[in-house]
Image (tube, rainbow, N blue to C red; front, side):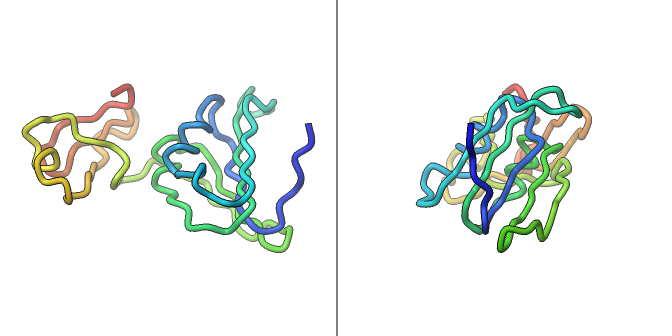
Length: 141
């Protein structure tokens, strides 16, 4: 397999195996006009298996989405073929526009222009609570 190095763009690394497609969908990477490479189940000494996403363009990235899906991921910024920044992500305190409240009485169900906002309730369980109605959202929901 031959995937060339990128000159300007991002490498999202250390994604838990199987998580790359979810990040791809949430970030809307299918709408880009640049090259995007997804490497699934790459061998990793630290993780066993991991996924990697390479984006061949410097675009605005929503790190909140990436860190919600996989807080252990790293985002490497490449400029002129050189690594200029490496960000180690952590579980975000707030998630905006990613989750949807499942409570039918929540104001976000009737007022469509209100953004879905969730606040971290339990970092270990990765549970978030709706900012408006306090409904708990669990990762498996």
